[in-house]
Structure formats: structure tokens, C-alpha cells
Image 1: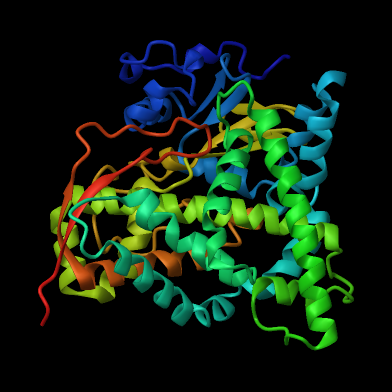
Image 2: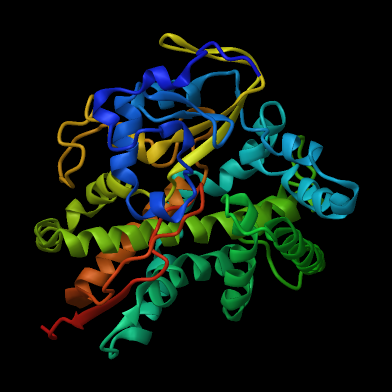
Length: 433
């Protein structure tokens, strides 16, 4: 394929000498995952837009360029179609399953389908709707912390960070709390493909989880709808009840669309929020001056969450496909090209954020891209923010002396996820007042 930048390596500058061939860097490799930020800095210094021979895609790393593509009408999120087109007859059933489920996912649809799906979900994710769930989220968080109160050491991801959003999802879906282990297995299975794992069996693993989840949720939706219709239960404000109540409206979803939507949110919400809380805990433990500030004044926690999202958010990148030419400075991305937008790199762009590699409270209203921006701004962002706020309010109320027990933090190396694989930590209970 011809590109407007005939020699992509011409972008390389002296400042990128530590990485002499950026066009060959594999973003979802263990080496990059372990030390991503110097590589991001080199990519920005190399111009912020680089054709990757390795990925056969454009890597966009500077804040202004990433934001411009996120807002560009020609930047499409319908990225699964090229994957399906490359499928072989042997994998047809696998590809068909993944395509059937993701066909109803907001992150993989452009308008007008995106508009209809988002409108159907919006009521359940409005800030006012999310705020009404705070007592439930706080009660869940307190119950999670009760379980670990007397333990000298915990694995923070499994014991806290994943538990909170997974249990919240059971409430939003009217599921028993005992389903958390199954939610974790399903989420991990879908992540194999959706987040860009290098596992050679990722298509089959993801398709298998999706089939299992389709069967479960179709039955669960039918059972819940029948119970509401018979008067056995009254429909409430849970996400599932809101979707069922809107079925007969012009923008209402069918049962299959509701099932696909529940699969998406069950995977994405715990995954993203768990990694937000996990990365935040790690960085607060590594920056005791920030931790001391928010412990002394809990009203700083919401602002700290925003700075932590900027500094080391859970989503390193998102993918787009150009449906028309996109001009970025002197470079033109041609229609049909894939684009990797490095959100975590953009949020560390020194040209927009002074001392961007420092974790600082009180940065003001800088519009970080931790949840994206524009049409595809993460619909679950208000819920993730609230869960993180409540989590740290309750953690700091009950614990102190956070000590990381990992001798060597190992980071996930999926293209679209970046967080520790585990975080063993000691949290000493605060003395009773």
C-alpha cells in the first residue's frame, strides 16, 4: 500500500537514538510493556505520527494528533470487518460468533448504529443515574474490605480491584453475587482477542466464551422479563431493567442486542475499572507524598483520580480505521489504513502537560484522554470514576502503611491493556478512633 510518507524512517530524530528502528517496535510485546513510557517519548520526538512496518498501521503518539483522530469523522471504529474478511473457512464458525456478538457493541460501530445503541444505554449511564448507585457501591466496597481486614498481605487485583466492579455488575444485571468467579473467567476469555493478546488460540478462546455468555444471558433476560411481566418482581433501576423497559420504544434493543450489550459491559466494565484501581494503588504507593495529601484531605480524591488516569490510565491505546484521508500535519493517512492511537503517550506529552512524567495533584482541567474523547468517549466512565472514588475513600479510611511486596512488577502486554499482572501489597489497618 502506498502512503503519503514514502520513507517513514525519515521521522526519526537524534532524540530517538535509543530506539533506532521505531517502525519495527512491537507495541504488545513484554519488552515494551515493562518500560513503555521512554518508547512513547521517542515516538513523540520522532514526530508523533509514524508508519509501523511491524503492525502495518500508523502509530499516533502526540496529544494533538491523537485527539484530532479521535474527533475526526473519517476515523472509524468498525475494525472487526477486516479481521473477518481474512478468516478461513476452517475458522468460519469462530469468526461468525465473534462477529455476531460484536455487531451490537458500541465501541465497534459508527453512526447511525452507534447513535441508536448509545441512546439506548445512555439513561443507565447518565451521571445522575450512576450517582444513585453510590450507596450500593459503598456497601459492596466495605464488604470487600471486610474480607481482607485481618490479612497481613493481599493480592490487590484479585482481592480488591476486580472484586468491586465485578460485584457492582452483578447488582446492575440482577445476578447473584456468587457469579463473580464466572465473570472473571468470561472477562479473561474475551480479553484474549479484544485487548490484543498474542495468544495464538485467542480467536477460539474468545468465541467459546461468547457462546457461553450468549446462552447464559439469553436465558437470564427471558427469565427476568417474564418475572417483571408476571408481577413476580417489579422492574427497578438496574441496567438490565432499564433496557427491558425500553424494548418497545423507537430506540429500544431486541433481546439479542441486549444480550450482546450485557456481554460487552460485563467484560469491559470490570476490566477497565479494575485496572484503573490497580494502577492507581500502585502509583499512590510509589508516591507517598500524594497518598499523604489525599489521606489528609479526602476531598482531593476525585481530582487525584483524574491525575492518575492521565499519569497511568488503564487503556494504553485504541484502534481506528481510516474511512477517508486524514491529514495530520505534513502526513496524510490514507483511506483503508489502520491507526493505533496511543492514549497513554498522549497524556504524557510535555508540549501539553508541564512535567508530564510527574504525578501531581491540582493540575486543573487538562482534558486527558484516559477514557478517550468525542463520539466514542467511554460510556462507562462515570461509573468507573465513582467506583474508584469510593474505593479509595474506603481504603484510606481503614488502612495505612501501604507496602508493595512484589520484587519485580510484571506488566500485561496486550495492545489495549496495560496494568500489573498482580500486585501483592500489605495494608495495615488503621487503629480504631
